[in-house]
Image (cartoon, rainbow, N blue to C red):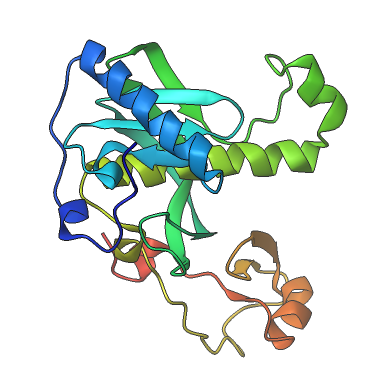
Length: 216
């Protein structure tokens, strides 16, 4: 059985497209590695030394992605994530809450992100998961999908790292002006007068969107 490669330059190179038939065989190997390790929820082919655009994710259910491509993404967020290829190096990343993905082995498109409605939820899920729990699980799945597709594009979590720097906000906002704040894992949109106690606790800070930070 193959092992997960760590801190390897091969992880910075985009992977090659493969046929669906070959992709399914590679996916089976990826699931074997995940099941044996029991410490991951997703894995890309290049993480086990295979140059192929294939990845698997197992958050709500097992998903195979063959030649995946993100065609739409919205609602930028911060997320704190780790990687099997960079053990002990978790970091805060910029991701998106919602993504739409096309794959050669799925028709139609795949939609990922927290859903406000319950249709389609398995009976077990609706009975055992609270609305907040479902939101967190579906958000985790969306981030994991982005994480694995990044691997196939030669991107690592280190390439998504964003180290937030506190900014002084005194006298910059009106009391009733709406602001977005973050603690690095969660974001909230509040009126400034309600956000101020959280900011002053130094556990939360004003969220600066990517386009305001000069990021691409």
